[in-house]
Image (cartoon, rainbow, N blue to C red; front, side, top):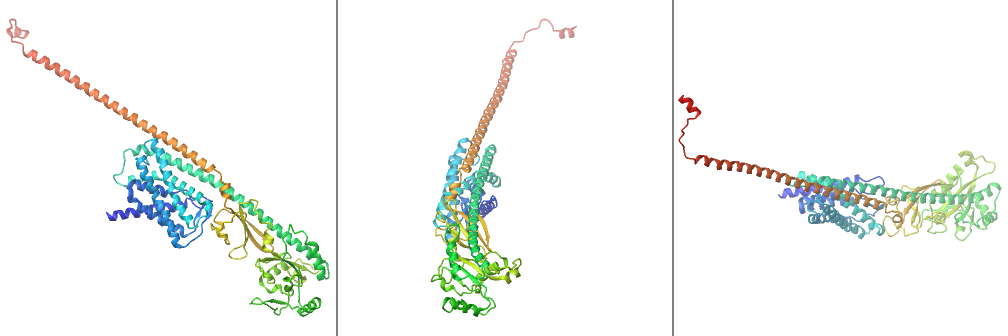
Length: 603
C-alpha cells in the first residue's frame, strides 16, 4: 500500500509538472506567459477522484514547476521581475506551490457539497454553483502573487493585474481541463465509473468548449490591446530618436559655420575665433549648448608651433598628453600632432586644455580619423573632460578642415589636404534633454550606447517615477531587462556612432491604455456558455424524467396486461371448476330408449 501511495504521488506530480510545462509551450506570439493552464484542471480532477491522497503529488509537481521557473527570469504581464537570492526564490516557490495545492482542495470540497456529481453536471443549479465555487477558490492564488510582491520582485502597480491573470488562468484551467481529466481518470481507475456520467458528458464538454472559446477570444483581444500599446511606445521612441538626430544635426550645422570661417580664410586669429563664436552663440533653443568649442590644427613641426604659441600667449606652451596616472606629460615624439590651439570659452577650466594633443587618446583619435577619412562629422562616445573634472560626460563632435583648393573626393586626398579640426564638446545632458521628451507623461525614455559589447544606459527621461526592471530604486537599467516588457525602440546613426532609444511604459501607462473589451467579451461568452449548458442540462434532466415516466407507464401497462391475463385465466378456471362438479353430481337414470348406437348394435 505504501508503494502504491508513492507511485500515485509521483504520477500526479509528473502529470502536473508536464501539464505546466505544456502551458509554457501554449504561449501565444507576443505573450510572455500563457493563460492556458491544464494543470489546475488535472489537480482538481485528481482531488475529486482520489481525495486528500492527491494533495502530496499536486504540491510536489507545483514545487518542481515553480523552482525551475524561478531559477530563470519571471515574465508576468509585460513585466520582468528581478532576480533574487536562491533561499528567497525557494520560499516564493513554496508559497506559490501551497496556493496551487490549496485551490483544488478547497474547490473539490466545496463541489462535493453544492454539486456532488461535478464536474459531470446533473442540474442547472449544480452548473451555476460549481462555476461560482471554482471562481471563488481561484482567489486563493492571491497568496502566490503576494509572496512575489513581498520580496520586491513585482512592481506594486502591476500586482493587481498579475493576480487577475493568475485567477483567470486557474479558473479557466479548471473549467476547460477538469472534465476531460476526470472522465479519463474514471476510465483509468477501476471501480470509479458512475451510471449518470454518460448523460452528463455532453453538457460538461460543451461548457468546457465555451470556456475555451471565451479564453481564446480574451487572449486575442488582449493581444490586440498589447500590440496597440507597443505601437504607441514605438511611435514615441521613433519621435524621440528623430528629435535627437535633429538636435545633433543642428550641433553639426553650428560647427559647420565655424569650419567655413577657417576654410575661407588663410589665417584665423584667436580674436576672430572668439568674435565669431560670440556672434553665433546667441540662440541655442534648437541646438545643445557646447561646453567648449576648439580649433585643433594639424601640426607637423612641434617646435615651431610651441614657439608660436609662446609668443602669442606670453607663456610657455608645450604639446602634452595625459599620462597613465592622469597627469599631464609631454607628448611622445610622432610625425603628426593635433593640439588644442583655440578654445572658447577661455575660462579657468578650459585654459589648461591649450596644447593638449587630442589624437593622443584612442577614443578621440578614432573620432578624428573618422571625420578626416569620410569628410563627415565624427563623434566620440561619452568621455570625461580632464580639464573640468566634472562628472557629466561629454561627446566630442569633430569636423575636418581642408586646405582651399584641395580635392576631397578620396580618402588619400582628404588626408593630404587636412589642415585641422573644428570640435565641440557637448554634455550628454545638454544633447538629449532637448530631444528625449516623451509626448506622454507616463512613458520613460532611455538612451543606450551600442558601441560597446554590452549596451550601457547614457540618459533617461522619466516623467513619472521610473521603474527599472521591477525595482523602485531607479538604478541603471539594462537593455536586456527593459526588452523583457512592453517597449518601443528606434536606432540613431550619427557621426559614426550608434545609439538606441527605448520607450518603456511608466507605472500608469499600460493600465490607462488597457480596455475592458477582453474581459467583457470573455464574460459574455462564458455567460452564454453557462446559459446554454444549464438549458442543455435541464433538458437532459427533463428527457430523463420523461423517459422514466414512460418506462413507468410501460411497466404499468405490462403489469396491467399481466393482471388481465391472470384474471382471464382465473375466470376460465373458475368457470370450469363450477361446471365440472354439477355434471358429476347428477343421479344415473334408466334409459328406456336405446341410443343410436344401441339401436345399431341391437338391430
